[in-house]
Image 1 (tube, rainbow, N blue to C red):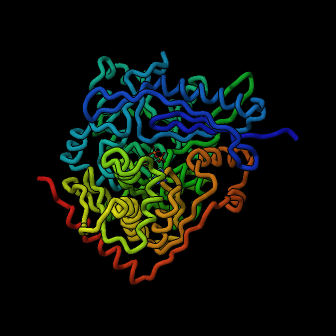
Image 2: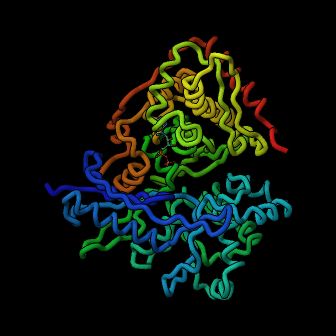
Image 3: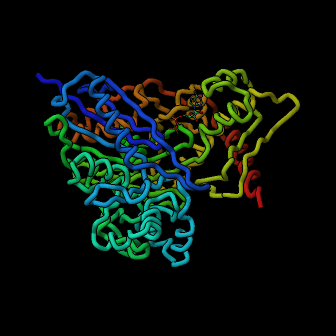
Length: 494
Ligand code: ADP
């Protein structure tokens, strides 16, 4: 029997990665390459779209060599990508007309204000599931069309194409033939009607975006086209934005299942089934994926400062030497920690939305030491996650079944145990924490018939389950103290 492999690409914000996954769903090789971050002005963040492409192609070739497999053994290719980042290129020359404007870029805040003044906020929320924000692609496209010379005429002549990073890679891999994206990426543009699954004419008109620029939108597990390598055709069979791919990679296939990624910030997504749920608590409604003629939705909330608070302990306060060390010192506090750290370094996001809040430390006494501070900072990640989960559960009207975790800080056992304790929910850490890229691999593997979705679910291996282990009285007391601290850190700067 010939061997079969899936090639999965993870085009992230700071690096491009490629992995080879074997039939058993094990990663057998990984290659990674960083690329430049370009900061032309304060608040502006750009990438060179060609550098992204080259770094991706270079890791792709290297990983096939490293895995020591033949190109004709690769039966499918999946792509996951940094979301919202915007590229516009000329379809005749293949050249981007401007650098990619990255999701973090805030230059279009004024354009967002303008949309709100035009009274479009409600329409955008109802149609796209998103809040009006510079984060999403729509206003970035508008900015490029308004600010790059000669672009308007080219756009009107139909010579320009827009894409999020997945589309840019897909178009290049298919020899400039296929201009498409998947539902999950489309749902982050602030231009896509997530219920009727089409581009929204009213928003396009308000932002002056010609329809000819936009990619076709397809399911996430779908044969988009072929990538020809050494004469072999590899079907490109799965595409999803990074957070949605992680939700799929964590096998949160059913309504009520959620994952939380503990990286620099936290990204919490809950599968809400085949109907979109619109948030009353400042969360985003987004398409999780399209598969087998069905579209699944998710509620999404994010915490701005999570792992970044651990970096602050290391680089700002210099009280730990590495992020891992935080667990060692926090464990030394055996009694109940009276200290609360609210890491509102950049204001508070969902569900509070207070940009005037600032970080604060409460509960200091004469015997407070660095260990209390370290433990309180770790605990703040769990408290913030609980805030989001309460909001999500209120919106979704679905109880949480279990929380699946990934990202750098999920390696911290003390944090994960405290997360289970404070949520009163089982926290599951998978063996493979490469959930994002596995999501792309699964979507592609299912499409080409290598795996069945139900088999992936039962095959998934858990590294550790954290079970709640405190009394409900204690849980309530601790969480009340956190909420009191949050209240007091609000509205700090003028
Ligand atoms: P990103 O993808 O956002 O760069 P990662 O998933 O690589 O983030 O996770 C890195 C973050 O996790 C850093 O902010 C770091 O401080 C934090 N981190 C890593 N390991 C630990 C640990 N053992 N305990 C607590 N925090 C950790």
